Image (cartoon, rainbow, N blue to C red):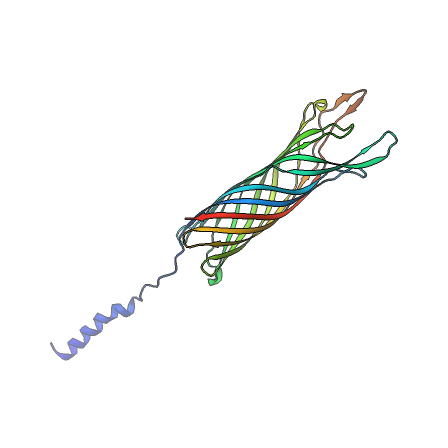
Length: 285
């Protein structure tokens, strides 16, 4: 072969190597499932909007348990899903007042038996390693349902009664996770809760046990979790959280005749502040 032909053949054989750059492997993130069991301890501060000197409050520390399943998709399917349920069978201190025959108002407190429960399911999208950092951002929305059974004991001439509050809400939030090293994870979860379909059942025989429609008001939820996970998938965490919720004034119950007077009841507007801690054990797979 002539030397010039050999040189051309060598150049042609090297062209594909220069024309097609080598494949650049991007870092992939694997999907993750996790199941968690938590113990909840939080402060409960509830207050109804009564014209003075009337009042109705509930306060105290309540405890409970929570179950949660979470799916966090990887690079190929960056979807997010979460299902959680919690319940708290706890007592609180009920504060109110009563008026005697001379028109004098006296404050008193009693113990209320309660059952609090909540169910929520969420779906969202995972933005992995935002800005080439170790932070993942997850906007999400979903559906939630809350229930509160409030069993008030009687006091002197005031008859005890039971109330069942229930309402749905639509969470709209964003969750951030940041990895620290190989095992630590910190986060922030902020959501607005849009209340819908609120109702209250009041067990009072003289008012025919009415079910009333509650006014829908928005609420807020903020949580800051800190967690540690081992290479085998087991982990533990502590979450600090705060929630504000509110209920608008209900409609009036059907009117009844008590003695010689027309009477009815309604649920006044109220607000609730809760803050507390959640101690979690989990397994990731």
